Length: 126
Image (cartoon, rainbow, N blue to C red):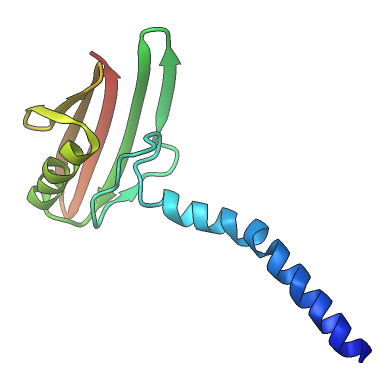
């Protein structure tokens, strides 16, 4: 009888603490799908954020964010991904690779070097 009681107690503790243990891991996994420095800018499929390349700065005039991602993907598919996705997030396309939303301007520069595509994200007040 004691072993059943101990098992039930251990199971109850495990269920109680599971969210505290696994929530940070889930948040890390979810964050991998976004451009570092941007809370709602998804990474296009095939891109990986460059570690330590993100820079954010908040001022009275607005925020400045710069980030870089790379991958072995087609430049056209990345441009199409952002042309389709960003309007759903409230961004309006101003020019090729330039988007505007609520007093901010986002410039996405796409460059190829050999097999690797480099995508630079630059956000600044408008």
